[in-house]
Length: 304
Image (tube, rainbow, N blue to C red; front, top):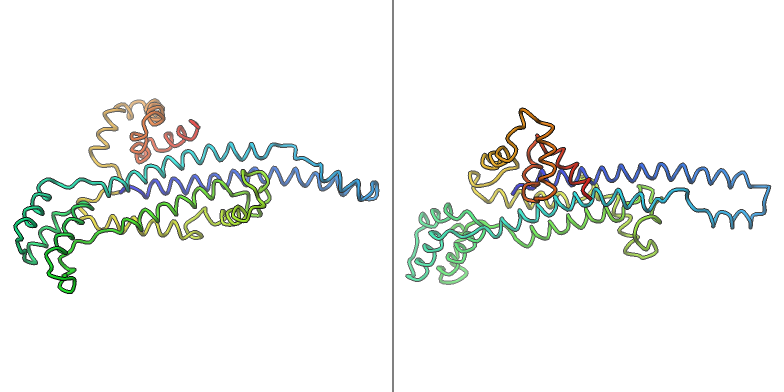
């Protein structure tokens, strides 16, 4: 499963969004400081009641909510695109087909009641490269044992925990959403400009937690997801496991669609960006190609 590059993209987008929010915060701080100076200058010239009323009616000179909404929309859409690609990779991993040859062997063994030796089971383990093939093999091992006490776990094929992997993905995605939806500066000074009721207990908790949702070191959900995905990949034989790079066939496909990169790199990047905006599958490949990844990422962000 080619997840690491996409996760890196998401983490970079989160950091970019955090930087954007902090940029808005700097403008807000300047705006607020100006107002505070006005209040200070009013001391001794006006009554405390009038100063308090003036302060309560103060409105910032900029529409900070609109500024945050625009920054969030740009970054979150592209982050969701990368998250959706990762989800598709997980779905494909667990939905990989069972080969007809393997299925026929399992059915023949079960229907005839054939007893297999340890070596024969080991050969079947090597042939079982998809999740469901391994599950079928394990069902065969279980059904061949007279009772649970005689079940030889060494004959079983290792399978990933499907529930823990989907759970880790969902938890990781919840934290990404939390960062985008609730981050309002490390000091929470922009909380009135995000889309939530800040008096609600759950929202208050989300706002506080959002600060921890931007990097791996402070958020265990990213570490747990990486560990789960790495473990799932390691279960496949190394020769059958896709890596984080484009395959030769994928490179050939990109070169066939965009054959003139060496002659016209700028034009090819522009064309790649247009393709990515209309074809999600090609976008996922182009994001892995170092020649086009930057221009494609920028195009997807600007298409919001």
